[in-house]
Length: 278
Image 1: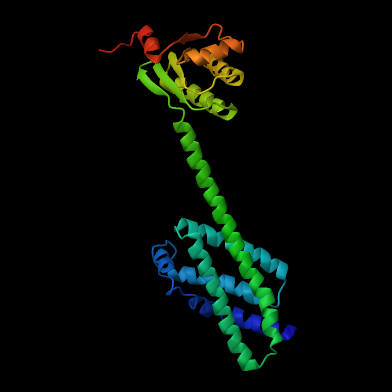
Image 2 (image 1 turned 90 degrees about the vertical axis):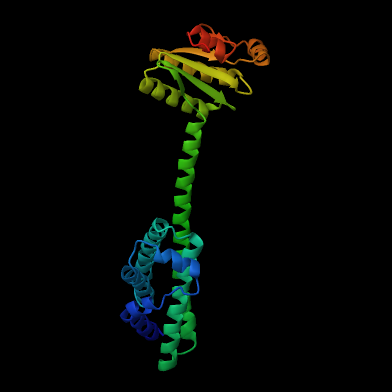
């Protein structure tokens, strides 16, 4: 039985390039279109397909653990190529399954020529099918990692947009906060306000909290930390927009704003800084 597997494996390896040319996607118009627009020349793409086919052949008589590692590396590289060429995950996986058809056609031809025992087909399947599944698994994982990175980038950009530092005139900016403030967002507010204050040469920063639904002890403490950090850099902070109901809650909680300057509205703070409607 081992001799039969070795013979089939060697035949696959010897004809890897010819078999790779048979991995075609005419029936998948979407995948064909994506491949035509890809950056990898078709000749190079065929050579790359031949490498995987060769691994399948070597698996029938070589060290299977070593072949698995090679297949994993191939799957990762294939995923990166597909991602770079904007080929979707579904199209990529459909393409991988075509390798199974090509391998089985070659195997069936040899089976008929050599009159191998029927059980040989099962033995080949037990070796090659898990490798094909492994390739698909690795490609799926790489696409998932890529999508996760894209989501993280998008989320970071969205977070930064949620902390807009708006220049009014030279040296004066407004930072309106809308929505709940937790520890993570408070850190983001601090980082962006400090960075932008230095970049813009800010002297006064109006921190408007009229869009914050709840100011409890935790939120107040977070705002204090932001104000203190800005004051250490020479920026004077004015907090505006503390609504009456929130002011009552603040008093009941025993939260003291101390020496921090507060004003009822942003307009009032701007007027005090000499900015009025013309």
